[in-house]
Image 1 (cartoon, helix red, strand yellow):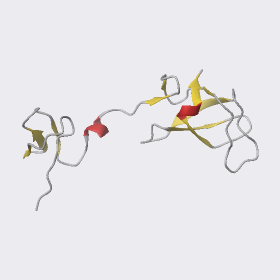
Image 2 (tube, one colour; image 1 turned 180 degrees about the vertical axis):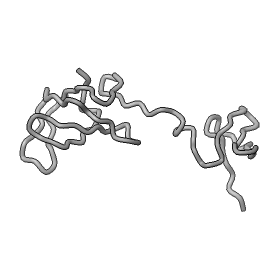
Image 3 (cartoon, one colour; image 1 turned 90 degrees about the horizontal axis):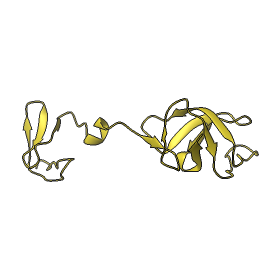
Length: 114
């Protein structure tokens, strides 16, 4: 039995294939048959604790003391993380280096943009 497909925009199941796309008869939304979802079409946005958009190369500060796994040195409040890198496909984490600890992966809920 074929599985029913719901429209990613309106959620209705009145969907039919048309060429290389699925089409929702209720709202008119079209998306590729290849299985790409609407979430793949929307660009990922990473935000800090205050809601500011973070980009590769930004500088952020830590808003509270954090224990670092694999290190006896904690990351203190106010520590600066320069030249951050966004993690592909993950809007909750960034990669970066502090002055004392290299190779950090940090949650954005503990960071604010400078």
